[in-house]
Length: 270
Image 1 (cartoon, rainbow, N blue to C red):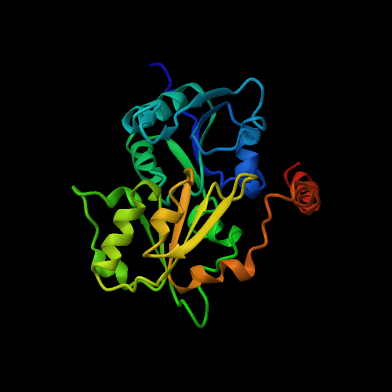
Image 2 (image 1 turned 90 degrees about the horizontal axis):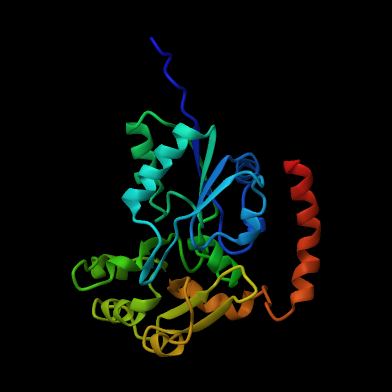
C-alpha cells in the first residue's frame, strides 16, 4: 500500500496597509521561506521581492471591475499548491480576517485536510486613520468604533442605516465609490449634516491623501480620490488637522524616520 503523501502548510498572512514595513516579523519570515506565494492587489511589491527566487508567484488580486481570479478558484488553488509545496503563503493586504475572506479560505483548507496558520496583519481600518492623525477611539469623543464594508452599501444589499448612525465612530472600507449613498443613508437616519468625515486614500504610501469635510460636503470634496480608501465618520475625524504627522511631500524626511526601524526589522527577522 502506497504511503499517504503529506501535504504542506498554508500561511494566511496579513501584509498590513501600504508601507511594507508594517508587516509583522512572523509574516515576513513566512514570505522569506515560501515555496509558493499567492498575493492580492494591495500587497507592496517589495514584499514579493522578499520571497526566494525559486518561489512560485501567483497574482490573485481583485480591483473594481477587474478580477484576476474568482474566490472559489483561489481556494482550489491553495489546496492544489499545498499538495505540491511544503510552505504556501496566501498574502493579503491588511488583515486576512478583516474583510479579507481569510475565514472562507481557512474553512476550505480545513475541509480539505490541509494544515494552515493565520498570521494577523494590521488592518487598514485602524492603520489608515492612524496615518491620517485620527484616533479611532478617544476618551472624550469616541468610546468605540464600528467597521463595515462599503460593498453592502448598494440597493440590493442595504445595511441597517439606523444602527450604523448610532455608532460612535464609523469606519467604512471599500466604500469610496458609494460615498454619496453612505452619507445619504446616515443623514436620513438622524446623523447631523455637520458630522465630521475624513477619507484617507492610499494610506501609508507616498501617495497618501486625506480629505476632510462633513456628511453634507464629503462626497463632493473626495470625488477625486483614488482607491483604496478608508472613510472615517464621527467626531474623531475632525482631529485630523491637529494630529496629521505623515507628510508625504517630505520624502527625505519619511526615509530618515524609517531608517532605524528598517535596521531593527532586518535584525529581528534574520
